[in-house]
Image 1 (cartoon, rainbow over the protein chains, first blue to last red):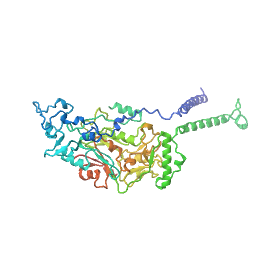
Image 2 (image 1 turned 180 degrees about the horizontal axis):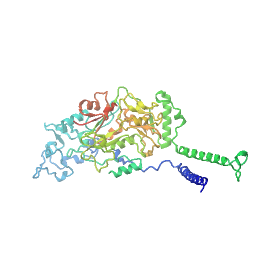
Image 3 (image 1 turned 180 degrees about the vertical axis):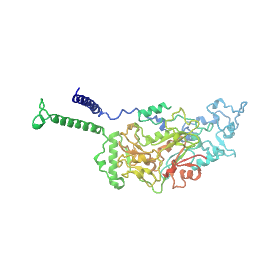
Image 4 (image 1 turned 30 degrees about the vertical axis):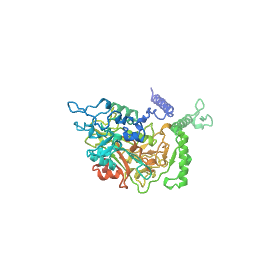
Length: 212
Length: 317
């Protein structure tokens, strides 16, 4: 093969390669991005602004059914209901109140209904100093034990606020203790987290999946 | 394409089919050059999010007269209605007198449920795909604030997890914002109430601000944002949550469409544990004033950078 022929062959091969590459680029010019992966819309339960639970005060506000709170439909007026305890001094919750889980305070320190409820009038609460407190106005009772938290709640550092930060433009709504905390089981139960960020880049998404 | 066959100069020497090598090469180069130009311009066909002439000729935000502003707001309402089939209310809200916003977040309370992230997305018309989220919640192991150990993609059955705490990070509304300093066109600035806002119509998409922000708070619309019609929030503000175009920057603006009319931001409203606190620091009666006065431990994220955030992380001690 002469010098000229070899050069010709190399140039021909190069030309074919370049034309093929050029055709590929032209044919792909229309498609811009790899298709985005589908991201499902977030469940609207995570956009809910309601409190964790509905308190008695909230039920009154929303004019809900309060028949469950009629103590004297079953209890006898003026006669304190008896409390029963098992051998470990755990309170035995009667069947009629089986929806109540007694888990307020550690080491069984708070397993007596009448630490908070008034035994003479079951429709009221009673602070340790003997003050009678309405069910819907319980924060001072909670504050009689949880002083610093009560102080923070009054100042606005603890608890939920909603509505208007500027009270001259609209109402500010402060939630009370029992709007979020079950008085019988005050620790807020763990909950399902909303979905995390979806990674845009497929490779990054795969890597993140592999690291879990 | 022109393939000259005649009028060839004598010295080229015609080939057997009447075409000289030079003319063939010339036409081949011209043709491939045109093809390459067409290929390189092809992506323009997809640029359907082109600004209107009216928007293109719009004046700078701070120079707009009230009448011009009214026209601009009407144009935006028309554009949104055309695109989403829903007539929004777009307002131009100015900062209130005697107000400086401060945010306080209780790290003892936060359970990492990410509800704030999604409430923010819904309120502020952020793109759902690709996702743009102003708030990032990171999980950190107890005992340190070492951001190298932060995990974004935690996904347990239930939160909070034992041994971890959670820290939501969003725009810190710095008193000394690096993002504002680097903007070459003054499309972002700090308003009198402390909120750093962006004029989406003035942003040129250079992303300098995203590079300058030490909190990763700024998010860029690399593609046209997608917002499902049924999830569009029609209560909009010019500097706030009106839908953005492709190629502009966006970030948390303390929900100006809510806070400048006295309401709480969406993330405060939705937080199930009351970890988020917001208010006017110039009002001694406000919640944030109480917190900054009485709480003892605060974290200003990356304090050493001198950005002086208006976002305070605190603990219940």
